[in-house]
Amino acid sequence: MNRGGSSAAASANYLLCTNCRKVLRKDKRIRVSQPLTRGPSAFIPEKEVVQANTVDERTNFLVEEYSTSGRLDNITQVMGLHTQYLESFLRSQFYMLRMDGPLPLPDRHYIAIMAAARHQCSYLINMHVDEFLKTGGIAEWLNGLEYVPQRLRNLNEINKLLAHRPWLITKEHIQKLVKTGENNWSLPELVHAVVLLAHYHALASFVFGSGINPEREPGISNGFRLISVNSFCVCDLANDNSIENTSLAGSNFGIVDSLGELEALMERMKRLQEDRGDEETTREEMTTRFEKEKKESLFVVPGESFHSFPHSDFEDDTIITADVSRYIEDPGFGYEDFARRGEEHLPTFRAQDYTWENHGFSLVNRLYSDIGHLLDEKFRMVYSLTYNTMATHEDVDTTTLRRALFNYVHCMFGIRYDDYDYGEVNQLLERSLKVYIKTVTCYPERTTKRMYDSYWRQFTHSEKVHVNLLLMEARMQAELLYALRAITRHLT
Image 1 (cartoon, one colour):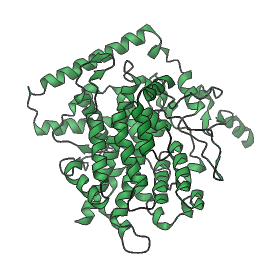
Image 2: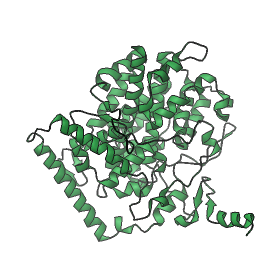
Image 3: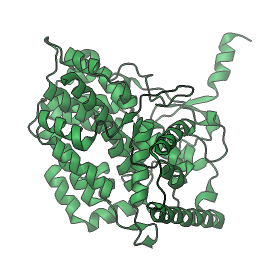
Image 4: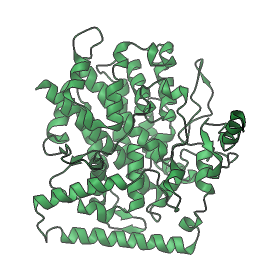
């Protein structure tokens, strides 16, 4: 057979999505004709989000005060399910983008674009392309990194490391950026840039984890074609929904099963709270449990099947479009497990040695005035946010569950709390939830509706959005801790 015939046969197994331009395998049961879901989220019924925002007038007030776009965008609508948190989020984001600070306004939006591009988050890229131009940015820069000043290009390395492997950031990376010369960064400028990078990496996790829909049809904006590949497309949704997963939601078996999961989770939470004072766990045992959880996270495979499909069915059959790749270098660089198989004596970040409260907060506040207070309020808000409910149950203390979610994210980034028993993570977070957490936190662009639907099936969408807020802030704090520790070492 000639090579042309062989190539044609191979290409017959693939198709190109006409909407998002992803290359997809035909055997993945794709129905490209299915329309996009309506509303701000592909995962959450439109009426639930709309009702929440209609009832709460505070959301509209916050948008008028702090939204950089001046409208109720899809992210804000979904976050509006938690108005207390939304206020902290919008205030801190507005400060980073619009208030007095070391960096010029257009540079702030370009850095946001660079950060979002690491996760192919075209929702955020589109948003900040518009903002970049509105604040006087040079249109030529949107042609790609080769058109921007060398000084901005020099952020590529720290952007890449922060997004995927923040534990590799050293004081040498900082020194390289702040060295004397025409392209150097001052420390206040660098801190502002690092805060923006961490914020938008984490926000990409929220966008994908919550199924945020595109704001508008791809088209032309200010002479530039908006990026047509988006977080979610008909091909993603069709692929998820075409797999026979009715047992998860439709059958009586699925409902009974998930009710049993809920009751079992509540029982484990209650037992952990009751047992806390009963047994004294040694420091050695605490360390052993952390190491065990860290190594077990290696085997939590992002995108793994909940329907007995082989893992290969969930490999990324996508290519990064030129519209996204123009804003990044080394596109193949991604998350790599902190605790890689076969390695011993891993450089664990002991949280007590460099904490946000005692070290990071004061450094960031000194170099970029007031941002520390705003970030601290946001971290505290999401960590303590509770309505004392779980699904249909009221008067529930969810502290142990919130702490397990936050600390599991930090565990995957190699951060250990000496006073936390990591045995709680295994007792409270079931495997499908761990897969979801790892995907949203480390590979957000691979998140699917099936993953979102697969865990906590009796919980409300509002509770799942709360999970995404916790994951987003835990991720941002982890990135900041590594970057600020490197800056502190540079200063000393």
